[in-house]
Amino acid sequence: MKQLLLLLAISVMGITANAAVYFTPSLFYMKYEVEQGSTAESELSIYNFKLGMTLASGLYVGGVYDMEAMDDNDRTSYGLGVGYIKDGWNLHFTYFLSSERESGSSEYTGTGMNFEIGYLFPLGSWSLGPTLTYRMFTYDEYDDASINPERDENRFLPYVTLQFMF
Image (spheres, rainbow, N blue to C red):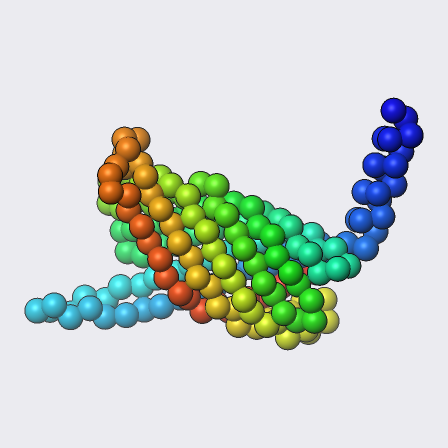
């Protein structure tokens, strides 16, 4: 048993010795007008934060916190992500374990997924670049009660992404 634990400890040390920690904030902002008899302005802001570890092979694992604000319609989500980071290229998949959408005085609860591809230009210990993301959310509870049919949200969005390596 001691030998197995020693082997496991050596393996973990070998993996983390070649690892890098990444903090990756991303931002999307849009201001737009809707005309339907009169003109109304709306703003949409999305902030995405990733914290994870990348192995020498480029494999990335980490956590994600995501916030969206649009007028009186806010969303907060968190999840786990896997991906690949190598030579400026970033590919990520996130499964949002929990997503809560507040719309007025009502609250939707569900899960979601996110796929990203981007290229980051290295600028020392940090990088900057564009990212394209496709996200899907499914809300199956409304004010703590099951809903049928479920509320689905899908969209493509461009981001400006920063990445810090420690």
